[in-house]
Image (tube, rainbow, N blue to C red):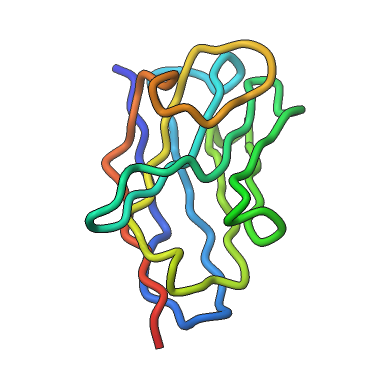
Length: 125
């Protein structure tokens, strides 16, 4: 059974950092693109970052570019999202998603078939 489990969320002050993890089971990351999305209360789900199956293509939304970094650990079958210089507007539930895609990754939520349960990130003083 294909499963994604996010962890690493929490409460952090503005300017702080968090690292989210997305552990995959039931499939190998070698053949899947992985993306992070987030959804704040009352807002639509927003694509944050993605990495393709080969790990040689990444993509970031303008709102997080230069602050967030996505990476894959194939040995651990886990994708990470390092989030630095966090802002209150980064507060949201963060989800990881997997799609059996090819080529460069894109941030369209409809392209991803498997989703985790989400982890809450709250940036507040």
